[in-house]
Length: 249
Image (cartoon, rainbow, N blue to C red; front, side, top):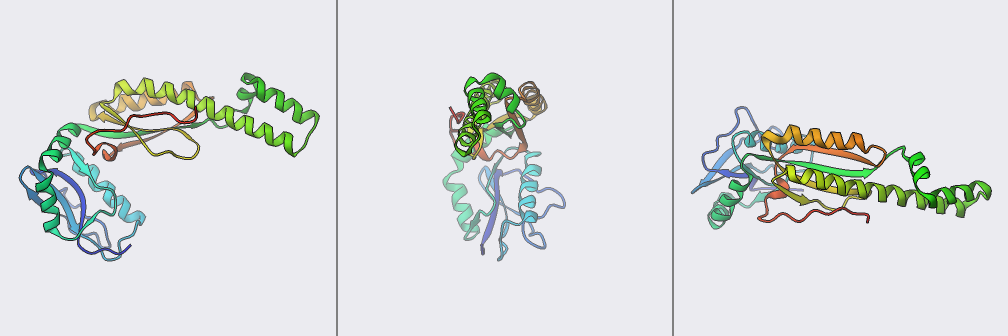
């Protein structure tokens, strides 16, 4: 990826101040600046000409957003958002001032926590004990070993694991949703029964994570729960979050 112009990190309220000692993407880190219009500001820097998704730059982008969130609500831009120039950014702030201001109000005091639910590891014994179809296919494979028998057994085990993860994912979604201000479904992920982001008030984040960990421990034979957060509110920038759903059944 090559880039010239203005790299945009976030849209914030106009009274934002830049974190001390914080740089932007690029090597050396680009100098940050603020473009203001009305009630809004955009945090930007010059875009490096050799912009790529290097770990260094991804971390710089994310760290800046998290530090900005310590001061107030932020509409985060995904990594690599480059505008042709400052005038383009200012025109966008002017054109969407009302919508952006409303979105900042909605995100005030919150951060994002992502929750993924995957099939449990090392759960074969539980699947065999609970699923009569798997037991029957296992016994058949033992009596008459062969490729077809092993294939059917493997498919049945995979389906049972996915079904158990989906059922647990639905329960997890029901338990966590009341603890969040909003919920947004993430993209489908291979092998993942649930990929959902929650808009959680910052003061409630520890309790939210603790409840998710409690659920994971209580249902470890059915599901793996992976948590990521606190994160910038990427999934809640749009005016309406997508409804959450659980895959696999």
